Amino acid sequence: MAFWAGGSPSVVDYFPSEDFYRCGYCKNESGSRSNGMWAHSMTVQDYQDLIDRGWRRCRPLQFQPSKSHKKVLKKMLKFLAKGEVPKGSCEDEPMDSTMDDAVAGDFALINKLDIQCDLKTLSDDIKESLESEGKNSKKEEPQELLQSQDFVGEKLGSGEPSHSVKVHTVPKPGKGADLSKPPCRKAKEIRKERKRLKLMQQNPAGELEGFQAQGHPPSLFPPKAKSNQPKSLEDLIFESLPENASHKLEVRLVPVSFEDPEFKSSFSQSFSLYVKYQVAIHQDPPDECGKTEAETPPNGPDCGYGSFHQQYWLDGKIIAVGVIDILPNCVSSVYLYYDPDYSFLSLGVYSALREIAFTRQLHEKTSQLSYYYMGFYIHSCPKMKYKGQYRPSDLLCPETYVWVPIEQCLPSLENSKYCRFNQDPEAVDEDRSTEPDRLQVFHKRAIMPYGVYKKQQKDPSEEAAVLQYASLVGQKCSERMLLFRN
Image 1 (tube, rainbow, N blue to C red):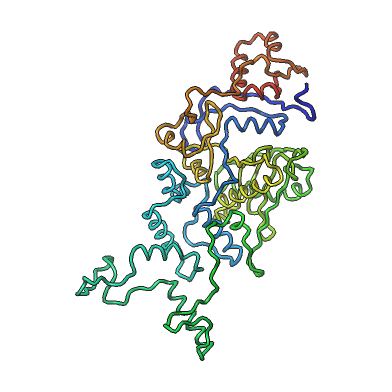
Image 2: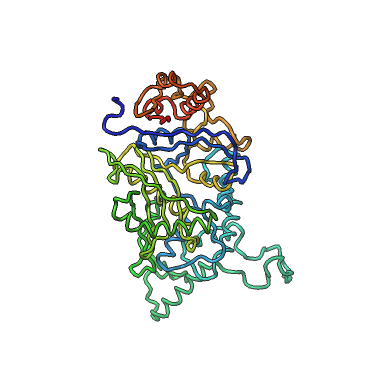
C-alpha cells in the first residue's frame, strides 16, 4: 500500500481493559484503568501521532529555568567544581512530594491569577529566602548566592534602633534583637571589609587604585556589565569549571540496540544501576529492558529517531540513565533511574533540564522537532504534579486532542479530577474514527480492511474491542497501522 512506501508498517496487538486496579501513584485500590497495545513493530511517525492523543508536552524553545531549577544546576556545578555535598535534606527529586513545596507559591499564583508562575509576591520572596538561609551552612558563600538574603535584610530593615526608642531593655530570649548592642552587619559587608583590610596590609602606602578619599572601600572588582537578559538554560548547564575540578561529568547518548558497541559494552553496568534504583526507590522487582532499533531518516537529527539512553558518567562510572525517545516532533522522556547514593544532586530535576537543552540542540538541525514530552500529568497526585513547573507547557484536551496552555487548565483541575480543556463547546476530535471499516487488520498473514475482516467473524464481542481501539488511535493511525488478530 502506498502509505507504507519506504518502510514496514506498524503492527500492534490491542488489549482492552475490563477492570479497575490499584494505582501505583495514589495507591487507590481501584483508581486505575488502562487500555494497552503491544507493538510488534512501530514507526516513529505512528508513535508521534499516538503520543499526540494522550501525552503532555513542554515548549522547550521558550523555556526559562525557575529559581528552583537554577538552585539544582548550581548545586551540581558546586559538586563538580569543589566536591561540595549539600547538608540536610536534599529531597528535590521530582517524584517526591517535596517538589511541590518548592513551587507552592507558583501554583497559588497560577490557580488564582491565571498567569505565568515566575511572578512572586514580596512575602513569598521573604519566606523562600529565610528558608534557604536556614538551610545554608555558616561558611562563606559566593556573593551571588547571598543576594536573596541581602534582599531580605533590606526589606526587614537596616537593624538600626528607631529614634522613638529611648530606653534599651534586654529582650527575653526569642523576643527580638538586643538594641543595647551594636546592630548586626550583613555578611557581604563584613567580607568586603576583610578584603579591604587585607589589601591595605599588602599595600601599606595606601596606594590602592580606586581608593576614595571619603574613606569608603574601593571597588575591588571591575563592575560587571549589566544585562536585562537572564542566563539561558545552556549558560547555566555548561558553565565552565576550574581546571582542578573535583569531579568530571559526561553525558553520552547511546542508541538502545545491542548492535551498538557502546550500548553493549555499558549494558551490564547500566542494568545493575537499574536494579539498584528499583529496589531502593520503588521496592519493585525490575523488568527486563526491551530492544528497540533507531531509524535514521533523511532530514532528521544526526543521531536518528528511536529509543536512546542518556548515560550520566561521573568520574568513569554511570550514576544515572535517562531513557528517551526521539521522534519527528519531540523528545519524549520515558524513564530515569539513578544511583540512590547521589540523590543529593537532584538528578531527576537535573536530567529533565539537560533533556530540554538537548531538545533545543536537536531543533537547530531539525526545525520540526520542537517539543519535550514528560508523559502524563495528574494534578491530584504529588508524584506527577511536579511536571507543571516546567513552563511554558501545554496539556492535551482528553476530548478534542488539542493542546491547551497549562495556565488555562489548572483552575478547572482544582475543581474536578477530569475536565475538558477546550473551551469551544462546538469543537470535536478532528481525527475521530468516522470510517471504522477502513481500519487495517493483519489476519492469517494477510492485510485487509476491517469491513472485510468482520464478515468472517462470528464473535460479536470482538467488534466492541476493535471500535474502542479505533476511537483511541484515531482515523489516521487506524488506516496506517495493522491491528493483529488471531
